[in-house]
Length: 144
Image 1 (cartoon, rainbow, N blue to C red):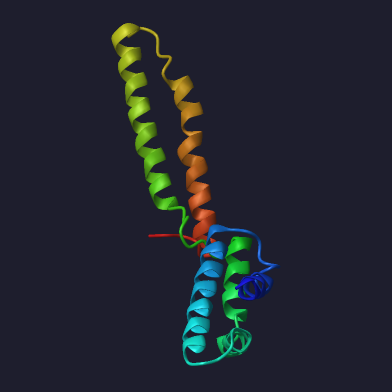
Image 2 (image 1 turned 90 degrees about the vertical axis):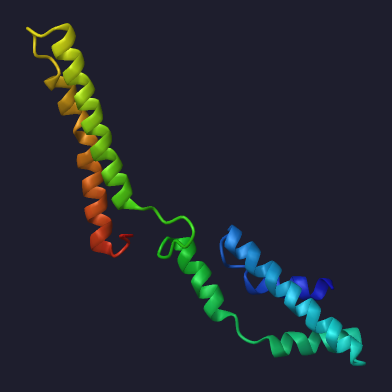
C-alpha cells in the first residue's frame, strides 16, 4: 500500500525529521492500512478502500502544528531539562569540592591559605546554573 505511505509522508513533509515524527507517521500508516483491510473485507476494491480511508482520516493540522512547535524548541516533551536539579547538583558539587580544597589546604599546608583561589573559579559553575535556571523560569520552561 504505497499510496497510503506516500500520502502520509506528504502530510508531514515540511516537519523536520525527529523520532516523534517517525512514530506518528508509522502509527497513522498502520491505522490507515488496518482500515483499508477492513473495507476490503466488506467488499470494496483496494483503490476504493484506500480512497475512503484517506477521506475519512481527517485533518492532521493540529498534529503537524505540535510537531513543528516541538521541533522549534517551544515544546520539549521527552527531553525536558530539569534546571532545578542541575542547579542543586552544581551547588552541592561545588560545596563538596570546596570542602576538599579546604581539607587539602589545612592538612598539607596549614600556614599558607591557597584554597581561596580555586574556589573563586569553582563558584562560576553554580552561578552560571543559577542564571540559566532563572532565565528558564521567566520563560515558563521551568520544571519542578
